Length: 304
Image (cartoon, rainbow, N blue to C red; front, side):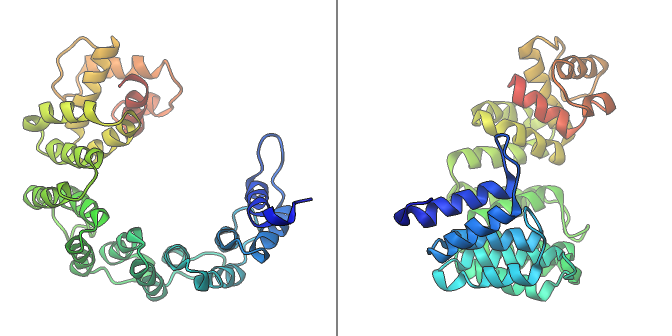
């Protein structure tokens, strides 16, 4: 029995627990739904978002898209526009449960979320246009404009997405990589981003330069928070594979697996070092091919 004063929070917590189970207790859709309904009735609007998401995506509860949408829509008057509209927008990007993807609905909800302060929703809109998601006609310039407009407002997430696009290209080949544009956007991001984020993005831009940027990315990599390094080396890998190999060589050398020079080349001694390091852990990708993002992330997680 939940004390009256704690119904909203306690029932919400129990509902979330029974969606997935844990600690030897099985998930229980019936209990999850009952507790979440109890929490919503007691005024816990966050539980409404949890229930709506579960119904919308069929995660922990039988999928029921109309019911999930209705539950989410009901949370908007409580001031949850950013989260609710963002969730509904993301759903319509992919569709599901017999509901087709719908670019028009996706963009409409996502724009509502952006207006309410959901910065990631702007990224989702841009990707709809850049990649032609949800049946939209690909329009790289429209997608870039969404991000550039965000950057003009000082949105750091838009700037980071633009750096990524300028480094790798995007829009199914419609946007070509541009080191110059990536550097220009990095300068703007440096004025608004947090220090660790600026180091992260600077490392990616330097890595794209190839060997001339190796020393800089090595220094920046060490300055990153430990927990950010696996993701950082993965991102470097997708921007410039030789730069990622260079970082791995530095780490493997420090850990005693590699005694060659750090040059970013996938030499036979480097491959041997990769495999030796990975045999100390469990990572199937090492057995398939040494130069893989999972291999590099594993090395950064265990040896940086």
